[in-house]
Image (cartoon, rainbow over all chains, first blue to last red; front, side, top):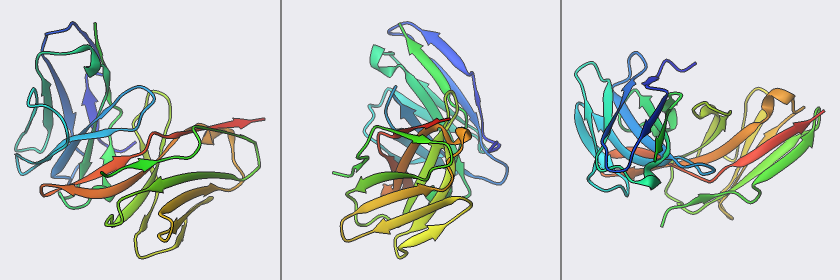
Length: 114
Length: 114
C-alpha cells in the first residue's frame, strides 16, 4: 500500500450533477496530481496541486476543478457531469512538484455517470 | 504530440517463463520512464523506473531496457508467476506548466497460464 487514500471508492451520479472526490496524500508529500482513467485505457493527467495552487493542467475543461488544503489533502470537483466522465479517478502524491517519476497512486474512485 | 504506446494489448505466458512487454514513446525530452502494474480494482503500482541517460536497470525479477535510438522501452519479468497477472503500463515524465506529470500508454494485459 502507498499510503495515499481516496474516497469514496465508488460513486454513481446522473448527467448534469456535480461530484467531489477526495484524496489524502502520503505522509511527507506536498504535491497531489489527479488522473482520469477510462475503461481499457491508461490514466490521463488532469491537473496538479502544489502549495495549495494548481500548477499545471492537462486537456480537461474548466468544469474540472480542484483544491488543495494546508494538510496537502486535495479535492477534485466535476460540474455538469457528462456520460464520458465515467471513469476511474486516480490521485497520486509526490514529495514535490518536480518528481512525477516518484508519484504514488491511491486506489482510485470509480465514478459512473448515468 | 506526446504519446506513449504499446505494441501488444495482451500477452499470455506460461508460469515460469520470462515475459517481455514492449512500449514505444515519442517524447525524447522525458527524463524518466516508468513501468507500472495495475491489478483489477487497484491503482497503478510502481515497478521500476529508468533515467533517460541509462540503457538498462535491474530490479527484483524485473529488468527495464531503454533504446533511445528507436524510442523503445521494454520490461522483462523473469520466471513469471501467477501473481504477475495484471495490466502493465509504461509512462514517461514531462511538464505542463510547472507541473511534472506522467503520460501513460494504453497498457498490456499479462496473462499467466499454469
